[in-house]
View 1 (cartoon, rainbow, N blue to C red):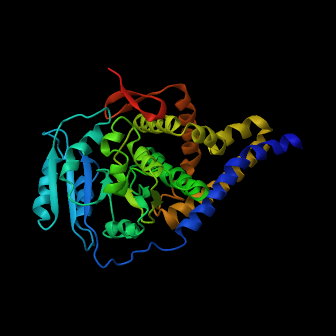
View 2: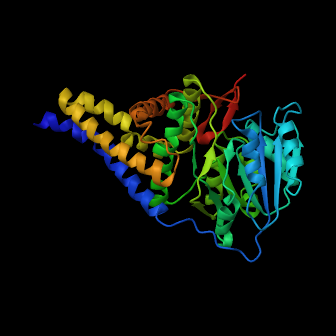
View 3: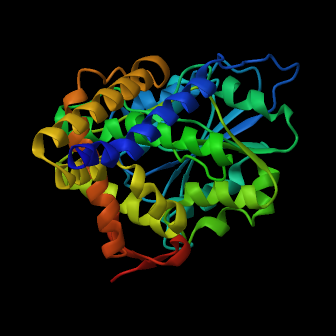
Length: 380
């Protein structure tokens, strides 16, 4: 009897965590996003680092030029290479949206190992407004994005607003594996962290923050030595005494067709970055991983009992993840791609484990070692 029960004990932590994330998601999303009208909306500068083309680049960029926002909006595109293929697209935007204040900086100056932050440092002198947005080039937003994120800054102690993100458009099972990480892992994990300890980090897809908060941490140069510049931006602003919050409006991360090797490399890079950035939390997170629960269930008891425990785990896991997918994140990936969840979970466990076996990552075609605290050292 005891041996038959052991597999069910093995899946208990992952099952309980999944149900906890459901409760945290319900508490966060139960109220609609508030979009209070401001008597005089503040000006916003969007800093957008660009390197090469992404899936749907023109539409991604254009979504920021079509905002339903009453205040002045400036968009500064930052490019390092004068031959970057995205430059003609940006010039086309200037023609197609003449009423929109769009600027382009082309500057190859390197300030540190994080080339994206170097790009931002080069563009920052052009920023005219005190509310700033850093947004990745593969992000597409709703017309009310700026209205939504800026509405929170009536709180004078608020330093930064992060936007959750999803990937609704996939190109088969390979990209679906990556997209499921957003709706089945990242968003639930962020909401649990928010509920239990409050936000002390930022999500890099779209971050909106005060210039004053950025300057309080030493400006963008304070981030240039780190791989996880988004985590560092939020964490350093938090440690400087500002509040961080999560907006309810979800932005879209546009995936491109990928190979499994490319996805594995990116997942390992994220895992190794988080291991050195939050070592205690990263180690503790292992007990909640469904992939670990699968292996422990198979090792701890008779096969019929193990299969029964795993089936119970995935009834819970699929139900919770489908709720996130259909009701809150709204990527509509589940339940159609639900059969990939066990593989997604085993992949997550494998990268979690591999993160402890080295500190080297590949990023934007270059090799780096990630040191304690998340600092980067280029490898030649």
